[in-house]
Length: 210
Ligand code: AP5
Image (cartoon, rainbow, N blue to C red; front, side, top):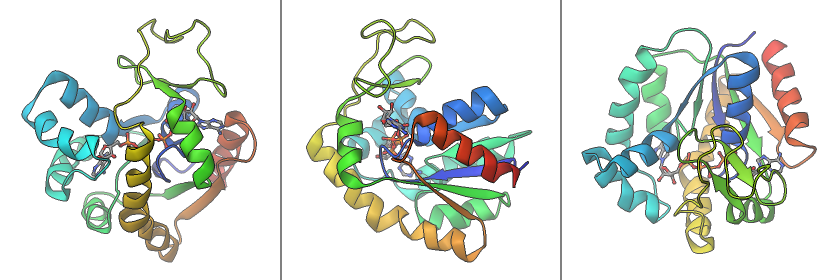
């Protein structure tokens, strides 16, 4: 099975949702740059203070900060792993390529109108990073994480204006990575708004085993 993978796709495509299932069902270690940065912001670290302005505006945190943050973490990974939210620019992809040769880039493709609905109705767990949706995947108890019991919250960047900027930033900076990994023969695209969350996982699992 392919064991070194990255998840690509626009904001709200379902990267975090599928990363959680890949971790739970197939034992992938997950590294999510978004989760790491949000934790740094919550803890008020130097990294968090620098990252917050960019994140709140829906922009990208500068490459030098992110590449430095990820290098050591990736070098220390063992076994099957997935990267969620990294790389996000060609410069980050080039930097990743100097550390590890990934097996597959899984591109989750979703139409823009669906993305806006998903993000405005998303609720996230600040403690274990589980992801919910008010109608598509509600928690069993209103406002409470099924997995760890923490109170769910709405991310600061899940406001409609910020979402529009995140989509623009995605198209300009991250979309070129689809071609980048396709040329290397490592791209698998899954339509992320056709079928249930479990259906999409099944298609990804099959691609990992092909
Ligand atoms: P990050 O946290 O990575 O955000 P993102 O890429 O914008 O992606 P999201 O987390 O918003 O969406 P997702 O695809 O994970 O969707 P989810 O599974 O939650 O980054 C945040 C910020 O950090 C960036 O804007 C940037 O500033 C900074 N940053 C991070 N990495 C960086 C990097 N490498 N370089 C520079 N800056 C960086 O699903 C969304 C919703 O849809 C949920 O409610 C879910 O329940 C629902 N859903 C999911 N799948 C389905 C389905 N199949 N059917 C129905 N509903 C579904």
